[in-house]
Length: 428
Image (tube, rainbow, N blue to C red; front, side, top):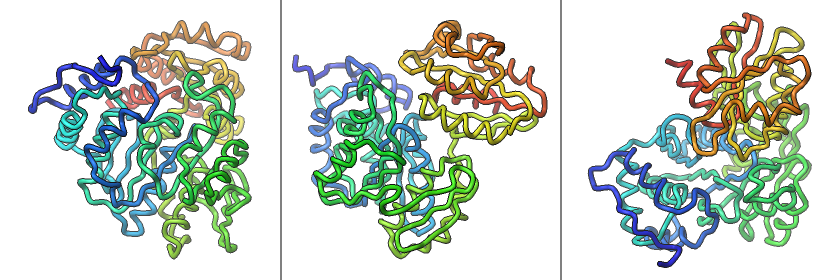
């Protein structure tokens, strides 16, 4: 049989969303299989031409979801009809596709899945490829003005990249997914710059972009806006002063979101909507919250959750914690991770701000047990720090909260699975 093909039986017309998701997980022989051939074949069956909406594609190691959330809020404030496609999700698959600020329904998703199933014939699609095509159908059906699309992995060979964007954004470039993207920023930058298209505008929010990103922009005639060329962000996470081309300046609001993500969204607005009154943006951005991104889940003690899962994200998170605590109280970390992550690098960064570790297992594919996590982290932990191991995230959270005093801080981080389980436990 052709390696692009599959003969797995599909769910019936009355199948539930869970039925479809289970089917999608077993359709393709591997979970991640980068390449555009399969998706392009099915895309051409589903769409006679490129969708008429304006498309913004967002790639990056970290900060993609925050950038999309900020840009979504700004465009909707402008009166635009906006759809977003992001991944992964925290609790429900429906979170991945939002239409004018609302998650799509189960029924809309299963109907879109059915259409993809008919169009694909015997072409084998990964879980992410299948869901991406269904998302495109849902966004098209909604008759939107703007599509904001998050790259799942890398850029050049990611399923989302089958659509040509009107604007491309790279939020950051750092080391993650080594097995798929490479082990250095130059190679990874080349993959992420694969979302560029000749002659379009692009934004790179990384303060020190790899030369591979700059080379790709020059080679394709891309008008690349980056810190120092097109805008300037100063003052770090506390002052956060943004200067746009033409001398416009404004102070970004204090927020749980990265300053670079807010700046990228504002620069994007200046590209997409040149006459937008940028002074209105401060109030809009102040109201943007992204679940799982330095999200406050409790007070006395303060409890925060963050989906950060690589050293680059850990450096940002450690800086946030240091500014929050300012030398007062203890910091207890609930940490659970997937086996393919650089847990040693994360532990090295976070050990500078963490006083006690509550390590938990993840009962998902590629999830590490709490004990396996402890063994991998041992050489990177500061001496004298408490380290406790738990089977579940909920068990670790409960123990950390029992230990913490009102002046302390509990940070829960490591993956979407970690934060999703913790949120469900705390909210119950």
